[in-house]
Length: 451
Image (tube, rainbow, N blue to C red; front, side, top):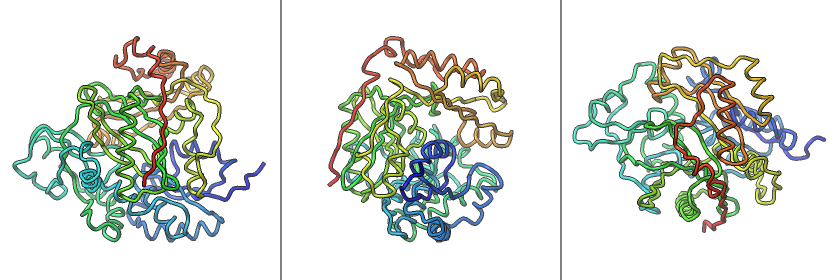
């Protein structure tokens, strides 16, 4: 039966988003628009991309297809374009200034200084042009990252001036890519949030050594609703994600404090509608929470985890918000797992070429684990070299599976990984006692007023 709901324009709909929106397309009719930043020739459009012109074109496309809402979970361009288009069309959406405040990482730190200084870390702009000389007198170690970026590109801890100098050397082609990735955002910042300053810059932060988490939620009608917290587990000795576990092992009191920090920040920047994701550290020894960044969108990679464990589909929530509907009135589905993870397969050897699974291997995994989701990321030598320079590792696959509990999940992952011919993303970070701890399967929900 065809849906009677209005169409939604979905911008930059790829990877997890494409899989998720296709699965619920019978409920939420939609039209895709935008280009893939990671495939040629689609990404050639980066050469002339302008957000205002793009939104003018999308307004025409929306009228052509009789769309009545817009959504996007694309960090680089989509979230801001969706906000601009919603404003232009008079549709429900996140305010443009709120998206800019979240995505301009230096300005977000300044806002945190005002509303939640206890959750901030010392920071400063790196006073140097792209590829320019590194200023003297900086304190090390330091964590360097772009003021505007996505996927942790060019973010790294540096221990001394020589390392920082090496990290900020770019070829002519790399400089072209960096500038064209940032300039569309920069143009809107100049118009709508000039007090933030340029996004064509790197910044430095004091490194934090603690476990990392992600708080997911949304704001609707002046109220912030938390959905849950996901644990981000790193490959040992690195800042590269190994997997994302849900539900979280973080205690309820710390989750409540994280939600309050999010409430204060989002209220200050005028974030009054939409999904958000707050990345943060929690130090078990000092009980300190430190914000990493705010994302004015859902973490699309986690949507499947919430659906498995809580029966909540984050993409359903995104569609509902795009049309001004209260997500709290939506029915949940029956959970299929007690715990679930997004397992990230990485190589830390630039010369290694992990083999992609054969058709027989993929079919065998699908038969053994019908609930699994597998994503493969084959890349050529040049792409791998770029990933190692910008990310210091190479992601070649992601697997989603659920389990009855954490131990069952680990065993299922190890079996599926062996069938794929890939090493399981576990590295002794969880003892059997922790895996069997019933608190690992606890969930936490609360509602806070933003005003």
